[in-house]
Amino acid sequence: MRDGSQVWNWSWIRPQFTQSEATEYTSCLNLVQNVVFGWEPDRWTWPSDPTGFFTVHSMKKLLSKSQVAHSLFILEWNNWVPLKTNIFAWKAEMDRASTLVGLTKRNVNAGSVVCRLCDEGEETSDHLLISCFYATMVWQFISNWCQIPPIYAFSVSDLLKVHKASILDRRKAKVLHAIILTTCWCIWKLRNELIFDNKSVNLSKIMEDIKALSYLWIKYRSPFSSISWKDWCNFSL
Ligand SMILES: [Zn+2]
Image 1 (cartoon, rainbow, N blue to C red):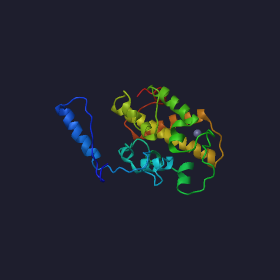
Image 2: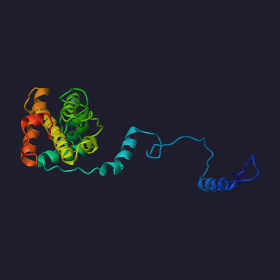
Image 3: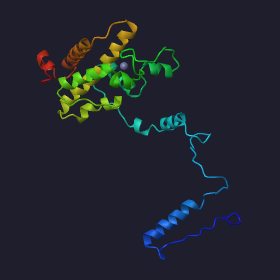
Image 4: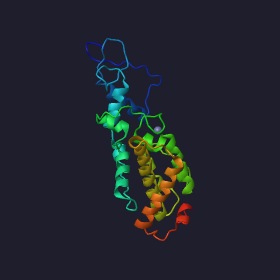
């Protein structure tokens, strides 16, 4: 600094620049020319928080403002399952289902937000439908039954895209999508029966319920009306 203005003293090893170095040099000068130097020691600062210090809260605020990737997901509605099933998946994908965490966010006092099924994670849509122990067992059953590779999902939107990545033809992929929607619905039903009716959790029963309910819906709502129960159980469409 000299008389309040910046003076650059460079000490170049080579006397001449190549064309690209000259361009980089000009870009560099353009970048630093508006930088105002002070006399205090240099320090790191986090501009998204008024204190200048990094906080998880400010990072969370920053991420929640950036919903671009999230809003790109468009739910594929499936008319082979009832509307209520589609609506539940749609709300769960947006994390607007009335889970314990969802209710608390809306200032509804739901007590503890710990998942009542596994008593471990917080009950968000992602937890209930994907990472909960019971959900993982159910998805394992679905992948075995539908003869597809194991289902790996990190979010509800991943779950609702599994049928697109499968090697099944278009109609069978739509059946798989219907089964996935039915499964989400059945897990939600199981959770509600546990919370509101105090019913015990029975994994074999939920798997039978998923098979039976999806059979009923596919048989009466899709072109697979002649499918037998035996073929359905073997996923031979
Ligand atoms: Zn759980």
